[in-house]
Length: 357
Ligand code: SF4
Ligand code: SF4
Image 1 (cartoon, protein in one colour):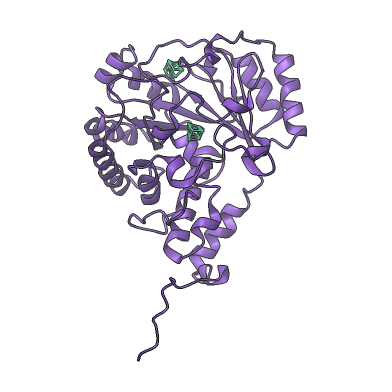
Image 2 (cartoon, helix red, strand yellow; image 1 turned 90 degrees about the horizontal axis):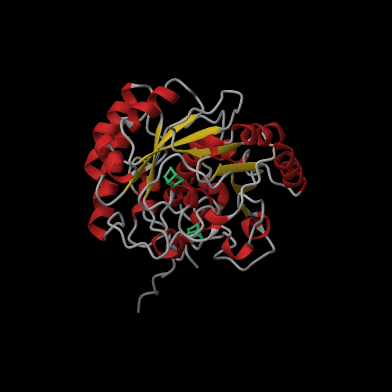
């Protein structure tokens, strides 16, 4: 009788995973940023446009009364710093409408990012990364965001600005527009990353993805990454994680307070999502509040959900490299001064099993 074959997969020590010099170098590079601790802030409930499927205008956070006093915001940032927050995400509705508040935040906590529609330019003295949301070509923006020449305006405002990353959000019906839009952005020297439309709770519009559009989006993302490797900040594993038929929570287990009752460690302990009246509610706190968790594939969510799962990925060389590519992408998109390296994995890698447990 022959000896039984071992049924468990090969095990790797962490040192084995770092054996390749390029992998070790990337690990050393990304671990320098483990100090980042984020919270997010709605800067105002006003917006200069109205988009179909906006998660800000779902739920009751839109009814908070704006606190528009820069001194109060400055004090809030000082308190945030004191409780260990090192990275701020300024969103809203539209942060560009409250420039004094942006400056007050930047003066106190200099690492962070602003999510904007890009219609109004943010002053150069605010040195955060600036994420400019793109939802398709100009015809689509006119239909969904009711804005004429939106891409032209966004490019005019942020061409040649090293703060800016254009975030192309794939919906169910703009997948084929991505190639010409990325070509136009690329021709203007703009950096681009990808996002997935993630339906707000109770959303019944036409932008929600299906299994077929998820698969087509993945293919398109991979093609564009291959075609524009210098302009597109993304990785094959980012495409896998964000276009999987399971959403991010089912796949990786979301650590934001809204889905994570633990108050002991990580985001469950430190993350807060402030409304524009500076109140916050732990039960509603995540980076995209009022998004349907089952459909959540949002790039901002993934930046914390996937990044926090080091131990789940550090089980084999391919999943560890895929995770490093994901984190390298996240840092290049979100952190001023971080430059994206070459992806270590050239093709898609499946998420490790049990990632969501
Ligand atoms: S620009 Fe942003 S905040 Fe304003 S309506 Fe559109 S999605 Fe909402
Ligand atoms: S919407 Fe996304 S980020 Fe927010 S709690 Fe749900 S799964 Fe997490």
